[in-house]
Length: 84
Image (cartoon, rainbow, N blue to C red; front, side, top):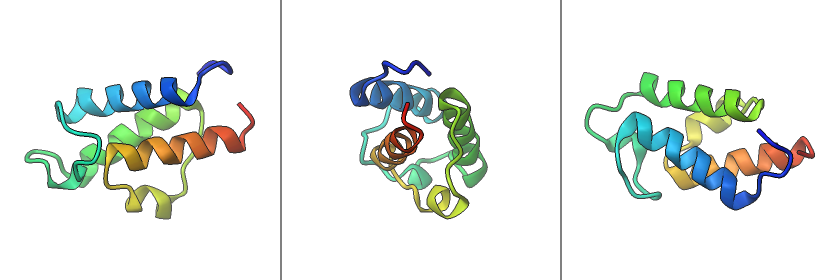
């Protein structure tokens, strides 16, 4: 991740990674309710997002994530907490 990434850039990157894995879904779709998407797939996507931004989300937070919007908010908060 670049230090110049904006909130909008984070949203685009995160949603792109998720949509690559689960298909074209709305930002507020419950990822766990998508046919063919199980908890393992969701965890793999979250791991890819964490690697992309060199962050680590807390397990409780990860298991509470339901939508792309939720993931974007968590990533933004983690990135801001690191001062990136």
